[in-house]
Amino acid sequence: MNDAPLILWFRRDLRLFDQPMLSAAVATGRPLIPVFVLDPETEAQGAAAKWRLGLSVAAFAAALRAIGATLILRRGPALEVLGTLARETGATGVRWSRLYDPISKARDQAVKAGLKGQGIDAESLAGHVLHEPWTVATGDGGTYKVFTPFWRAVRPREVAACVPAPAALRGPAVLPVSERLEDWHLAAGMARGAAVAAPFQRVGEVAALARLDAFLAGPVAGYAERRDFMAEDATSGLAENLTYGEISPRQIWHGGWRAMQEGRAGAETFLKELVWREFAYHLVFHSPQITTRNWREAWDGFGWRDDNADAERWRRGMTGEPLVDAAMRQMYVTGTMHNRARMIVASYLTKHLLTDWRVGLDWFAECLTDWDPASNAMGWQWVAGSGPDAAPYFRIFNPATQAEKFDPDGAYRAKWLHKSSPRARDFFVAVPRAWGLQQDTPYPAPVVGLAEGRGRALAALAARNA
Image 1 (cartoon, rainbow, N blue to C red):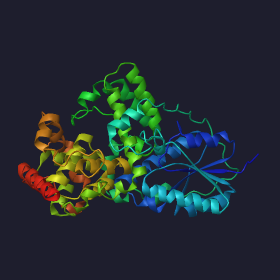
Image 2: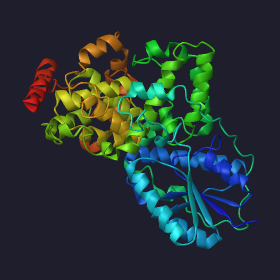
Image 3: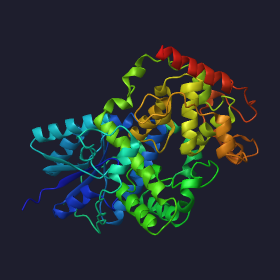
Image 4: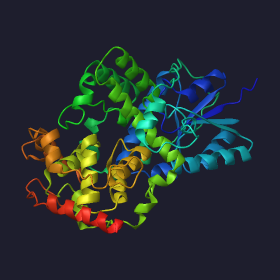
C-alpha cells in the first residue's frame, strides 16, 4: 500500500463539507498535507478580493485545526512551491479542485505537466461547478450561447449528492514549515477601507451555511418579486461565499431544490440565478476570450472610449446620477453591490458614458469582495451588448426610471448618499485619501443628461451599423 503523503492544494474551495477532492484524498488513507499557495496569479488579484481571500484562508485554517489538521502556507510560483514541498515531505502526489478561467487553467496545466515531469502524480478533481463544462452540450454537441436553453438543459439533470466532511485528517509524521498569513499583508491594497468593509463580510463555511439556511427559511419566498428592490434584504448574499468555495454549488442547489419541492415561491428563480453562474463558467471554459475581448467580434470596431475623466467620476461615485453613485458607494463600504445596481452602473458607464466595458470589468475586479472571473466578465459583456445572451445595445438602463421602479421610496439612495446616514459617511472613510473627498464635498451636477447620454449611445450604435 502506498503510504506516501498526498499534498492537497486548496484555492477557491476553502471548505470541508462537500469537498470532492478532500473526500477522495481521505479515502486513500494516506497522510495528507493541506496547502495554500500565494502564487503570482493570486497576488495579481484586486485589492478587495485578495483581502477577502485572506479572511477565508484564515477561517479555513481554523476549520482544519478543529479536526486536527494544519494548513501549510507557502508563497511563490505554484509549480516551484509544490515541487519543493513534495521533496521536503516525500509526498508522491498532488491533488486540487479544477478551476476554469483562462488564467487558472493555464497555471494548472503547467503545474500538472511540471509535476508529472518530476515523477509526481498530479490530479485535478471537480467541485467548483454543478456540472463540468464539457458535459453540458447542445443537441449537436455544441456550446450553449443563450441562457434559457442552457437552463432547460441543466434543470432536469441530476446533481450529485453532497459528500460529508471528514471528522479528522491523517497528517504526516513531520509537518513542513508554514509561512505566516499576516506576513503576506493581503489587506495592504485596501488600506483604511478594510476596517470599513470588515463588518459586512460573512466569512467561512459556518457563516455560509447559516446564510443559506436563513435565506431558505424566509426571503426565498419573495425572491422572484423582491430581489430587484435594492433597499431590501431579499437576496441570499451567497455570491461572496461561492467565490471562495466556502460553500459548494451542489449544497446550494439541493437546498434550493428542496425549497422548491416544498412549494416555497421564489425557489426556482433562485436556482436559475445559481445556474446563471454555471452558464458563465460554461462560456468562460469554451470561449476564454470573453474575459478580455469582445465575445461578439463584430463589436471590435465599436467606438467605446478608453479610460477617461468621466469614467473616473463614475469610479468615485461622483457622476451626479444618484442611483449610480449610491451603488458605487455601496461597493466601497461593503465590498459588494446589489445585482440590479451592477447592471445599472455597467449600463451607465458603457452607454451613457460610452466607455469600454473592460474599464468597468477591471474596476469591479479591484473592488468587489465577491469578485468571480466568469460572472464578472459575462455580466459586463451582457450589459454592454458585446457578449452572449446580451441585452440589445439599444436597451439602455435609465437610472432615474430604474430608481422609480426598484427604489421607489428612495431608501437605497438615502442610505448611501444622505449625509445623515452612517453608511453614507463610511464612504468617505473607505475611499482613497488621494481622491480628496470629504463629507462636506458638494454633490456634483450630472456628468451627462440621461436623454443626452442615451441619444449619444444610440448615435454610436447607428454609426457602427452604417
